[in-house]
Amino acid sequence: MATKTEMFDLVVLGAGPAGENVADVAHARGLTLFASDARPYFPTHYASDLYSIERHLVGGECSYYACIPSKALLRAGAALRAAQRVDGAKQAVAVSGVDVVGVLRRRDYMTSGGDDKGQVGWLKGAGIELFRGVGKLAGPKKVEVLAQDGSTLTLEAKHAVCISTGTVPLIPPIPGLEQAGYWTNREATSTGTVPKSLLILGGGVVACEMATAYASFGCRCTVLVRGMGLLERMEPFAGEGVGKGLKELGVDVRFAVDTTRVDRVEGEVVAQTSKGEFRAEEILVATGRKPATADLGLPSVSVGLGPGGYIPVDDTLLVSAPTNEAEPWLYALGDVNGRALLTHMGKYQGRQAGEAIAARARGRALGPLGKAEAWGRYTATADEGAVPQIVYTDPEVASVGLTAAEAEKRGRKIRVVDYALGSVAGSYLLADGYAGHARWVVDRDRQVILGATLVGQDVGELVHAATVMVVGEVAVARLWHAVPSFPGMGEVWLRLLEGLGRGDE
Image 1 (cartoon, rainbow, N blue to C red):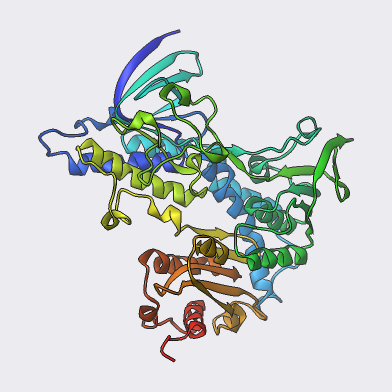
Image 2: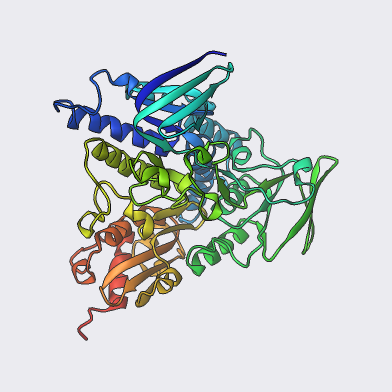
């Protein structure tokens, strides 16, 4: 088959959110920063300077099988229940449940029916050439791409190669599971029909969100958790609140369950476990993710994998490997590096790496970086202690920064302040009998906020305020002058301050 070689400034393996953002930022920096330079980084004809390789859909998992469709599936149930919690509204809404056909139709609209032509158009408009195929490293700054017709293309990167291939579901080696057939997040978010019953293996975000969505559809859900709690990486009260909410939706949650075998008998899934037998029409495996690093050619450039099989990187997203010691060129962005497995963090890393690539292309040495650049444009420092997240269960969970346990593990002297969200004046407007909880983790020595967690209806919209507090390292004394609007839910920050005290009493 035909083989040819082409030269590009930047080659990106994977056109998901991280890959799109690194290409976009590098493009912007090339056109604006270096257009008038005597030695321009990017030539004027930019369309041939960036190359993105994608084997599936441009936009990645998030756009078609994760963030976007899952939230589309969840929203109708959340809106219905919110109305049912307000006197005067609850009398006007149907109590029979959501219209599943309408929910799936809206899901399809939000995911463009699995058609990525819109995002492909964005790539072309940004001057990024797309190649649908399978790419792998073939030596320093070289990527070999296999097309569907069997032809191969060798790409040579002038400045950088970025790996942004994401993750794939981690499937436990349960006897019979492969033969029985199972759902992952892809099937759960893209199905055209809703089963009458669903077994869910796992207790993390995917398990909790899909149990919430499918229970809203009238599906009988059973969640089998190996551990002793839900959302175990978050504050304990988060999992407890979500567990209570799932129970109210009719979801059966079982803890300390080991699944020993799965079979499909006469069209029904039968799971044998340490807590007995469970049956359902389908089974969703939501037991975690693993990095998509297979067949990437990493040995060709002597890149070793870190814990969990993730690619280790520094704060500029440069791969920690001998291949980068003489001349930095290989980066790993998003979920594949294991730093923060969230779409918005992958986008963030893409932006930071794009800046770093452009800076290094101009000859700027970025490492080791000093404190002055710790929160600068070239580093992904937020990955270490300022990661925000929203779990769209009912109640919602919103968090940023460190939990109390994480802070203590890092040797911080902390104070924990809690407040019942149902006592905030704004909660009375949102729902009758509103219930929720808020927590601050405060650094005793520095008097700044290290982390915040909120559980309750609609708390997701509060998390960015907390993120600014954590990232900005805003002194608690200054927060007394950030006056919350009444009667909004943001008044919770004042109540937490009052629980903390002014420190002069």
